[in-house]
Length: 464
View 1 (cartoon, rainbow, N blue to C red):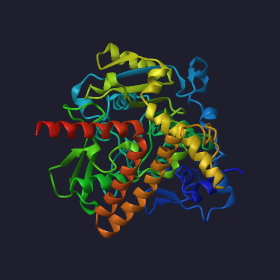
View 2 (view 1 turned 45 degrees about the vertical axis):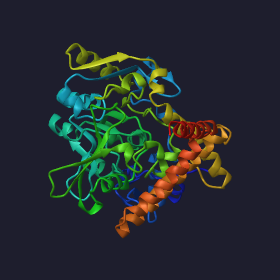
View 3 (view 1 turned 180 degrees about the horizontal axis):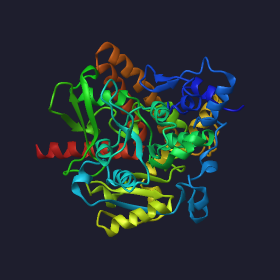
């Protein structure tokens, strides 16, 4: 049985990208749900509109997959190499911006912001569609930036549920050329929309992807902010990636500011409940069914170079996979001008920067698909085959516990928010994190810890 947009919505696998709303001219409204994730309402949609919507849904079997879509510029595809983990590529580099002012205000190496600014300044596009701060009820949303200053004001990673529907509806038909930035499923949705809508296809010129582990509900920002002393009702601003010169690039702080206050509150992210990415707090169910890590349908993708040799550089280092010769030339020109530094690396190195991501998204996906099929649930067709034996017994327990934690985090925080009691969330998650750690630690490690305690006890007795 085919898995279309109806099954996607019914199962809660929708990511809220809003492509269905754009494809139907707004006939499908997309609104925030109770767990602060965007959800479409397809209950009153005519059959022809539903058919159009299901062709642009990134989790529908009726939509072209990443292999069929490929990179945006098909005419240049013959010049691309291919790796089953990264998709097509013309060049793979690691690097960073050379100006500290740019670098320190970015989440990683600053190269994504540099490219967006250069695309606008050089006239290759008229504006950029990307996520940034939103004055109003929501902290972040998709916005349109026309200048380098506007682009810079919206830099940094925003782990926050957003939708493309309003921004794309607003720019559609205005005759301008755009670069669009997004995580893999959003870029795929935008590419699918261009297949359906020739007007959008002429407007969306450059697709810029972001390496993704998973998205977050808007609850994620609120849960971290509340833990540093800023409750949801008072939250004005957050910073998910505050670099700390005393620690590695992957060991950053979280910051929050309350309304009417100038001072920010900061805490080490990994010290906050849910701050460890591996615990899957506020993880949408849709992300459990994604197999695209390097935004294979984008012109270029930026991520963090999470390797030991780069972690000590606290200012950050980007991993970059390009699929566009024009952008490759821009990179070389910027090197010649002394704006950025890059060096070529292998596909293996790029994949290694996301080793944990591949374990969760590929090995984990095989297990999750098999689990759901065994329960008689509808699942989307993926490039990873369902297989409960793809992982060890130990790994399967971790995969299932992480999925359990994601579901519980959303329901627990919803209750905590409604009742004004943060402990209703932190108690549940702390219990589940302890369970996860018990699963994660092999028996031999536990035995060593116990043995060390015994030996320490003997040593203390002797000294006494």
